[in-house]
Length: 323
Image 1 (cartoon, rainbow, N blue to C red):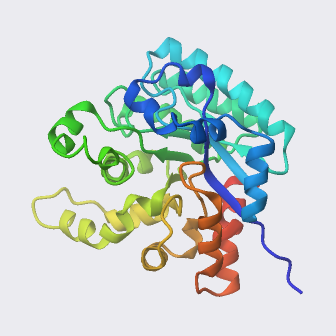
Image 2 (tube, one colour; image 1 turned 120 degrees about the vertical axis):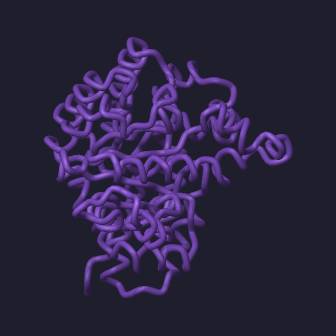
């Protein structure tokens, strides 16, 4: 009988108390309830219990948004280093159940690259997660490219995760409804719009020409980009746009992985598989902002052959992250 595949979830969050203390009220709101605070602070009995109840074998932990992306350079570097040291100790206590993405101090890009290397080579971290914008700047900007050069050298991915949008965007797009629907600016819409825009900018920036082995991960089924791939590709190929040897669709499909974090839809999953192929889709929950069991129950119930399901459950993550 074939061995049952592991279930690995790789967008699963925690909050470091020292980093969290620097958050703005908007950024702190998502994890402020007693239910969330308890789970975001727990690396032991409660987290493992809820993994076991859902049949999740491993979580790859990542700090909650906006992590250190909205800090000054000196503060971000010092806090990231201490947070990563604490994260390593937490994972070391349950090495068969917990792995990690590094907290990445992008306000100092050279230090971010060095911290990525330190955590990967010393602690065995699986890459890094960066959130939203760094002090208003998208991460495709060339000042951040030292981080991507180092990620390619280390053969680890960078996970691009949403954060609360720029205040000017909130004011222009969401202010009329945000009092009644505060999540409109975050997980319901604003997160996806900003992070999808970041994904598009990466493809247009030339960073993948400079670092052809670089791999980026997007959660929430690619922030909607797989659905839009044909449209974006066709439109950017029209006269008046810069002509490139590689199409947008080719670049995205060769350099992006996506996860199911917080997005448990059969039709949406099938769209992603059709567009990107089964080898670029990985299971995630988005714990504790989304409960483990609904995500695990959903992926097990999806109609799919066993080999393909095993790739989504763990095989693709094991290959990309060397788990």
